[in-house]
Length: 369
Image (cartoon, rainbow, N blue to C red; front, top):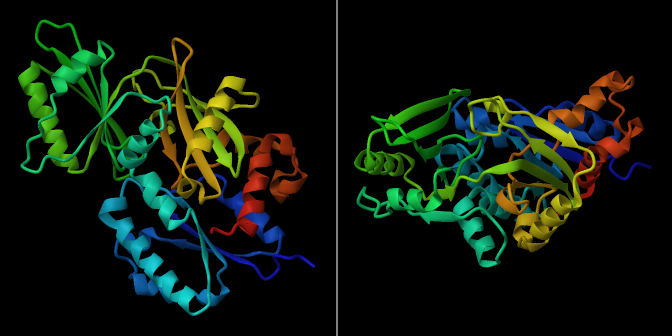
Protein backbone atom coordinates (compact mmCIF):
# COMPACT_ATOMS: atom_id res chain seq x y z
CA UNK A 1 0.00 0.00 0.00
CA UNK A 2 1.25 3.50 -0.87
CA UNK A 3 2.21 5.10 2.45
CA UNK A 4 1.32 8.51 1.01
CA UNK A 5 -2.10 7.52 -0.36
CA UNK A 6 -3.91 9.69 2.20
CA UNK A 7 -1.35 12.48 2.03
CA UNK A 8 -2.11 16.01 0.77
CA UNK A 9 -0.01 19.04 -0.17
CA UNK A 10 -1.14 22.67 -0.44
CA UNK A 11 1.12 24.57 -2.85
CA UNK A 12 1.07 28.33 -2.38
CA UNK A 13 1.96 30.41 -5.42
CA UNK A 14 2.09 34.00 -6.64
CA UNK A 15 2.81 35.78 -9.92
CA UNK A 16 4.23 33.62 -12.71
CA UNK A 17 4.93 30.11 -11.47
CA UNK A 18 8.26 28.39 -11.87
CA UNK A 19 8.66 26.12 -14.86
CA UNK A 20 8.68 22.90 -12.87
CA UNK A 21 5.27 23.29 -11.18
CA UNK A 22 3.51 21.00 -13.65
CA UNK A 23 6.17 18.32 -13.28
CA UNK A 24 6.12 18.43 -9.48
CA UNK A 25 2.33 18.30 -9.35
CA UNK A 26 2.30 15.40 -11.80
CA UNK A 27 4.83 13.41 -9.78
CA UNK A 28 2.93 14.02 -6.56
CA UNK A 29 -0.29 12.78 -8.14
CA UNK A 30 1.49 9.71 -9.50
CA UNK A 31 2.29 8.87 -5.89
CA UNK A 32 -1.39 9.18 -4.98
CA UNK A 33 -0.96 12.50 -3.18
CA UNK A 34 -3.77 15.03 -3.28
CA UNK A 35 -2.58 18.45 -4.44
CA UNK A 36 -4.20 21.83 -3.77
CA UNK A 37 -2.89 25.08 -5.27
CA UNK A 38 -3.73 28.55 -3.96
CA UNK A 39 -2.66 31.93 -5.36
CA UNK A 40 -1.69 34.07 -2.34
CA UNK A 41 -1.43 37.07 -4.64
CA UNK A 42 -5.24 37.22 -4.63
CA UNK A 43 -5.12 38.01 -0.92
CA UNK A 44 -2.19 40.42 -1.31
CA UNK A 45 -4.04 42.43 -3.96
CA UNK A 46 -7.38 42.37 -2.14
CA UNK A 47 -9.24 40.06 -4.49
CA UNK A 48 -9.86 37.70 -1.58
CA UNK A 49 -9.64 38.20 2.17
CA UNK A 50 -7.48 36.04 4.41
CA UNK A 51 -10.72 34.56 5.76
CA UNK A 52 -11.73 33.63 2.20
CA UNK A 53 -8.44 31.78 1.89
CA UNK A 54 -8.93 29.92 5.18
CA UNK A 55 -12.50 28.99 4.29
CA UNK A 56 -11.35 27.50 0.98
CA UNK A 57 -9.97 24.36 2.63
CA UNK A 58 -10.73 21.69 5.17
CA UNK A 59 -7.49 22.05 7.09
CA UNK A 60 -7.68 18.61 8.66
CA UNK A 61 -7.04 17.33 5.11
CA UNK A 62 -3.80 19.30 4.64
CA UNK A 63 -0.50 17.64 5.65
CA UNK A 64 2.09 20.08 4.30
CA UNK A 65 2.22 23.58 2.84
CA UNK A 66 4.86 24.28 0.18
CA UNK A 67 5.53 28.01 -0.33
CA UNK A 68 8.37 27.70 -2.83
CA UNK A 69 6.24 28.98 -5.70
CA UNK A 70 5.61 32.36 -4.10
CA UNK A 71 7.64 34.45 -6.54
CA UNK A 72 7.87 38.07 -5.49
CA UNK A 73 7.50 37.20 -1.81
CA UNK A 74 10.83 38.85 -0.95
CA UNK A 75 10.20 41.89 -3.14
CA UNK A 76 6.81 42.48 -1.50
CA UNK A 77 7.47 40.92 1.90
CA UNK A 78 7.30 44.06 4.01
CA UNK A 79 4.41 45.65 2.12
CA UNK A 80 2.01 42.68 1.99
CA UNK A 81 3.23 39.12 2.36
CA UNK A 82 4.69 39.36 5.85
CA UNK A 83 1.25 40.27 7.21
CA UNK A 84 -0.40 37.40 5.33
CA UNK A 85 2.15 34.81 6.46
CA UNK A 86 2.05 36.08 10.04
CA UNK A 87 -1.71 35.51 9.95
CA UNK A 88 -1.16 32.06 8.47
CA UNK A 89 1.33 31.19 11.20
CA UNK A 90 -1.14 32.28 13.89
CA UNK A 91 -3.89 30.23 12.25
CA UNK A 92 -1.71 27.10 12.02
CA UNK A 93 -0.69 27.47 15.66
CA UNK A 94 -4.38 27.40 16.59
CA UNK A 95 -4.78 24.31 14.42
CA UNK A 96 -1.88 22.68 16.25
CA UNK A 97 -3.52 23.27 19.65
CA UNK A 98 -6.46 21.28 18.29
CA UNK A 99 -4.17 18.39 17.34
CA UNK A 100 -3.96 19.24 13.64
CA UNK A 101 -0.23 19.69 12.89
CA UNK A 102 0.51 21.06 9.40
CA UNK A 103 4.12 21.26 8.24
CA UNK A 104 5.30 24.35 6.34
CA UNK A 105 8.33 24.44 4.07
CA UNK A 106 10.23 26.68 4.23
CA UNK A 107 9.38 27.02 7.89
CA UNK A 108 8.22 30.45 9.08
CA UNK A 109 11.51 30.81 10.94
CA UNK A 110 13.44 30.04 7.75
CA UNK A 111 11.43 32.59 5.79
CA UNK A 112 12.23 35.32 8.29
CA UNK A 113 15.92 34.33 8.42
CA UNK A 114 16.54 34.11 4.70
CA UNK A 115 14.47 37.13 3.65
CA UNK A 116 16.42 39.54 5.85
CA UNK A 117 19.79 39.72 4.11
CA UNK A 118 21.31 42.21 6.54
CA UNK A 119 20.78 39.75 9.39
CA UNK A 120 22.24 36.64 7.84
CA UNK A 121 25.12 38.47 6.15
CA UNK A 122 26.21 39.87 9.52
CA UNK A 123 25.85 36.41 11.03
CA UNK A 124 27.95 34.75 8.32
CA UNK A 125 30.55 37.52 8.38
CA UNK A 126 31.06 36.80 12.08
CA UNK A 127 31.65 33.15 11.16
CA UNK A 128 34.43 34.26 8.78
CA UNK A 129 32.67 32.96 5.66
CA UNK A 130 34.47 34.31 2.60
CA UNK A 131 32.06 36.80 1.10
CA UNK A 132 31.76 40.06 -0.80
CA UNK A 133 32.82 43.02 1.39
CA UNK A 134 29.51 44.40 2.64
CA UNK A 135 28.49 47.38 4.74
CA UNK A 136 25.02 47.36 6.31
CA UNK A 137 23.58 50.87 6.43
CA UNK A 138 20.54 51.38 8.71
CA UNK A 139 17.75 53.68 7.54
CA UNK A 140 18.48 57.25 8.65
CA UNK A 141 16.16 58.22 11.53
CA UNK A 142 16.13 61.88 10.50
CA UNK A 143 16.18 61.35 6.74
CA UNK A 144 19.94 61.85 6.48
CA UNK A 145 22.48 59.03 6.48
CA UNK A 146 25.94 59.70 7.91
CA UNK A 147 27.46 57.05 5.64
CA UNK A 148 30.01 58.59 3.26
CA UNK A 149 29.28 56.90 -0.03
CA UNK A 150 31.96 58.85 -1.90
CA UNK A 151 34.66 57.70 0.51
CA UNK A 152 33.44 54.08 0.26
CA UNK A 153 33.42 54.30 -3.53
CA UNK A 154 37.00 55.57 -3.46
CA UNK A 155 38.00 52.63 -1.26
CA UNK A 156 36.25 50.15 -3.56
CA UNK A 157 38.24 51.34 -6.56
CA UNK A 158 37.34 51.97 -10.16
CA UNK A 159 35.03 48.96 -10.52
CA UNK A 160 32.46 50.61 -8.28
CA UNK A 161 29.91 49.53 -5.70
CA UNK A 162 26.49 47.92 -5.49
CA UNK A 163 23.50 49.12 -3.47
CA UNK A 164 20.61 46.79 -2.68
CA UNK A 165 17.75 46.65 -0.15
CA UNK A 166 18.21 44.28 2.79
CA UNK A 167 14.86 42.70 1.86
CA UNK A 168 14.20 42.11 -1.81
CA UNK A 169 14.71 39.89 -4.84
CA UNK A 170 14.89 39.83 -8.61
CA UNK A 171 17.43 42.70 -8.60
CA UNK A 172 14.59 45.10 -7.86
CA UNK A 173 15.92 48.51 -6.72
CA UNK A 174 19.52 47.36 -7.10
CA UNK A 175 22.03 49.99 -8.22
CA UNK A 176 25.56 49.90 -9.64
CA UNK A 177 27.61 53.05 -9.09
CA UNK A 178 31.00 53.59 -10.67
CA UNK A 179 33.36 56.41 -11.53
CA UNK A 180 33.59 57.61 -15.13
CA UNK A 181 36.16 59.70 -16.93
CA UNK A 182 34.18 62.41 -18.64
CA UNK A 183 34.50 66.14 -19.08
CA UNK A 184 31.04 66.71 -17.62
CA UNK A 185 30.23 63.77 -15.32
CA UNK A 186 32.10 61.92 -12.57
CA UNK A 187 29.76 58.99 -11.81
CA UNK A 188 27.46 56.56 -13.59
CA UNK A 189 24.46 54.98 -11.84
CA UNK A 190 22.68 51.92 -13.27
CA UNK A 191 19.35 51.30 -11.54
CA UNK A 192 17.24 48.15 -11.92
CA UNK A 193 13.51 47.99 -11.32
CA UNK A 194 10.65 45.54 -11.65
CA UNK A 195 7.64 47.72 -12.40
CA UNK A 196 4.31 45.93 -12.95
CA UNK A 197 6.31 42.79 -13.71
CA UNK A 198 8.29 44.67 -16.38
CA UNK A 199 12.07 44.70 -16.04
CA UNK A 200 13.89 47.93 -16.76
CA UNK A 201 17.36 49.38 -16.44
CA UNK A 202 17.86 53.12 -16.05
CA UNK A 203 21.29 54.69 -16.58
CA UNK A 204 21.98 58.13 -15.13
CA UNK A 205 25.12 60.25 -14.93
CA UNK A 206 25.99 62.37 -11.93
CA UNK A 207 28.20 65.44 -12.12
CA UNK A 208 30.06 65.51 -8.80
CA UNK A 209 30.36 64.10 -5.29
CA UNK A 210 27.74 66.49 -3.88
CA UNK A 211 25.14 65.21 -6.33
CA UNK A 212 26.19 61.62 -5.61
CA UNK A 213 25.69 62.17 -1.88
CA UNK A 214 22.29 63.69 -2.62
CA UNK A 215 21.40 60.69 -4.80
CA UNK A 216 22.40 58.29 -2.02
CA UNK A 217 20.28 60.17 0.54
CA UNK A 218 17.29 59.94 -1.81
CA UNK A 219 17.93 56.21 -2.28
CA UNK A 220 18.08 55.63 1.50
CA UNK A 221 14.82 57.48 2.03
CA UNK A 222 13.10 55.65 -0.81
CA UNK A 223 14.14 52.20 0.46
CA UNK A 224 13.59 53.08 4.14
CA UNK A 225 15.03 49.77 5.39
CA UNK A 226 18.67 48.74 5.89
CA UNK A 227 20.77 48.89 2.73
CA UNK A 228 23.63 46.63 1.70
CA UNK A 229 26.59 48.46 0.20
CA UNK A 230 28.98 46.05 -1.51
CA UNK A 231 32.12 46.16 -3.62
CA UNK A 232 31.46 45.35 -7.26
CA UNK A 233 33.54 42.24 -7.92
CA UNK A 234 35.29 41.49 -11.22
CA UNK A 235 34.52 37.81 -11.70
CA UNK A 236 34.97 34.91 -14.07
CA UNK A 237 31.79 33.09 -13.00
CA UNK A 238 28.57 33.69 -11.08
CA UNK A 239 27.38 30.39 -9.68
CA UNK A 240 24.16 29.19 -8.07
CA UNK A 241 24.41 25.94 -6.13
CA UNK A 242 20.95 24.63 -5.28
CA UNK A 243 20.67 22.14 -2.44
CA UNK A 244 17.71 19.77 -2.33
CA UNK A 245 18.21 18.30 1.10
CA UNK A 246 21.98 17.92 0.94
CA UNK A 247 22.07 17.07 -2.78
CA UNK A 248 23.36 20.04 -4.84
CA UNK A 249 23.05 20.84 -8.51
CA UNK A 250 24.81 23.72 -10.19
CA UNK A 251 23.93 26.60 -12.50
CA UNK A 252 26.35 29.11 -13.99
CA UNK A 253 24.70 32.44 -14.67
CA UNK A 254 25.61 34.80 -17.51
CA UNK A 255 25.09 38.51 -18.07
CA UNK A 256 23.36 40.07 -21.06
CA UNK A 257 25.40 42.66 -23.00
CA UNK A 258 25.40 46.10 -21.36
CA UNK A 259 23.13 44.96 -18.52
CA UNK A 260 25.76 44.27 -15.87
CA UNK A 261 23.59 41.80 -13.97
CA UNK A 262 23.31 38.02 -14.21
CA UNK A 263 19.57 37.48 -14.12
CA UNK A 264 17.29 35.84 -16.70
CA UNK A 265 14.70 38.59 -16.28
CA UNK A 266 17.33 41.07 -17.43
CA UNK A 267 18.51 39.06 -20.42
CA UNK A 268 20.97 36.72 -18.70
CA UNK A 269 21.07 32.96 -19.13
CA UNK A 270 21.45 30.02 -16.75
CA UNK A 271 23.75 27.22 -17.86
CA UNK A 272 23.37 23.81 -16.23
CA UNK A 273 26.81 22.54 -15.16
CA UNK A 274 26.66 18.74 -15.03
CA UNK A 275 30.14 18.36 -13.52
CA UNK A 276 31.02 21.53 -11.61
CA UNK A 277 34.61 22.04 -10.45
CA UNK A 278 35.36 20.44 -7.11
CA UNK A 279 36.24 23.80 -5.56
CA UNK A 280 32.73 25.11 -6.35
CA UNK A 281 31.19 22.08 -4.65
CA UNK A 282 33.57 22.26 -1.71
CA UNK A 283 32.95 25.96 -1.07
CA UNK A 284 29.18 25.59 -1.37
CA UNK A 285 29.24 22.62 1.03
CA UNK A 286 31.32 24.64 3.52
CA UNK A 287 28.80 27.48 3.40
CA UNK A 288 25.87 25.06 3.70
CA UNK A 289 27.39 23.34 6.73
CA UNK A 290 28.05 26.72 8.36
CA UNK A 291 24.41 27.77 8.10
CA UNK A 292 22.35 27.72 11.30
CA UNK A 293 19.72 25.01 11.61
CA UNK A 294 16.96 27.58 11.15
CA UNK A 295 18.19 28.16 7.60
CA UNK A 296 17.93 24.45 6.81
CA UNK A 297 14.30 24.00 7.83
CA UNK A 298 13.38 23.81 4.18
CA UNK A 299 13.57 21.28 1.40
CA UNK A 300 15.47 23.52 -0.99
CA UNK A 301 18.09 26.23 -0.50
CA UNK A 302 20.23 28.14 -3.02
CA UNK A 303 23.74 29.45 -2.40
CA UNK A 304 24.95 32.16 -4.81
CA UNK A 305 28.66 32.73 -5.14
CA UNK A 306 31.23 34.47 -7.33
CA UNK A 307 34.55 33.20 -8.65
CA UNK A 308 36.88 36.19 -8.74
CA UNK A 309 39.63 36.79 -11.28
CA UNK A 310 42.18 35.49 -8.76
CA UNK A 311 40.24 32.20 -8.53
CA UNK A 312 38.92 32.85 -5.02
CA UNK A 313 35.27 32.04 -4.32
CA UNK A 314 33.13 34.45 -2.31
CA UNK A 315 29.55 34.17 -1.10
CA UNK A 316 27.06 36.54 -2.70
CA UNK A 317 23.81 35.62 -0.94
CA UNK A 318 21.48 32.85 0.24
CA UNK A 319 18.05 32.28 -1.28
CA UNK A 320 15.55 30.00 0.40
CA UNK A 321 12.14 31.63 0.06
CA UNK A 322 10.92 31.42 -3.53
CA UNK A 323 13.95 30.55 -5.63
CA UNK A 324 13.92 28.27 -8.61
CA UNK A 325 14.91 24.85 -7.41
CA UNK A 326 15.02 23.63 -11.02
CA UNK A 327 16.15 26.09 -13.65
CA UNK A 328 14.70 25.84 -17.18
CA UNK A 329 17.90 24.23 -18.42
CA UNK A 330 17.42 21.35 -15.99
CA UNK A 331 13.87 20.86 -17.18
CA UNK A 332 14.71 21.04 -20.89
CA UNK A 333 15.76 17.40 -20.76
CA UNK A 334 12.30 16.47 -19.52
CA UNK A 335 10.62 18.37 -22.34
CA UNK A 336 12.78 16.79 -25.03
CA UNK A 337 12.58 13.25 -23.69
CA UNK A 338 10.21 10.88 -25.55
CA UNK A 339 8.28 10.31 -22.31
CA UNK A 340 7.87 14.03 -21.64
CA UNK A 341 4.20 14.04 -22.61
CA UNK A 342 3.52 11.35 -19.99
CA UNK A 343 5.48 13.31 -17.40
CA UNK A 344 6.70 10.05 -15.86
CA UNK A 345 9.62 11.59 -14.02
CA UNK A 346 10.78 8.39 -12.36
CA UNK A 347 11.51 6.85 -15.79
CA UNK A 348 13.81 9.66 -16.93
CA UNK A 349 17.57 9.90 -16.57
CA UNK A 350 17.96 10.57 -12.85
CA UNK A 351 21.61 11.53 -13.29
CA UNK A 352 20.31 14.72 -14.88
CA UNK A 353 17.20 15.37 -12.82
CA UNK A 354 17.85 13.47 -9.60
CA UNK A 355 17.28 16.69 -7.65
CA UNK A 356 13.74 16.91 -9.01
CA UNK A 357 12.93 13.41 -7.80
CA UNK A 358 14.62 14.11 -4.49
CA UNK A 359 12.52 17.24 -4.03
CA UNK A 360 9.29 15.29 -4.46
CA UNK A 361 10.51 12.54 -2.12
CA UNK A 362 11.34 15.08 0.58
CA UNK A 363 8.07 16.92 0.10
CA UNK A 364 6.24 13.65 0.64
CA UNK A 365 7.92 12.87 3.92
CA UNK A 366 9.50 16.09 5.17
CA UNK A 367 8.63 17.04 8.74
CA UNK A 368 10.16 20.10 10.32
CA UNK A 369 11.21 19.98 13.96
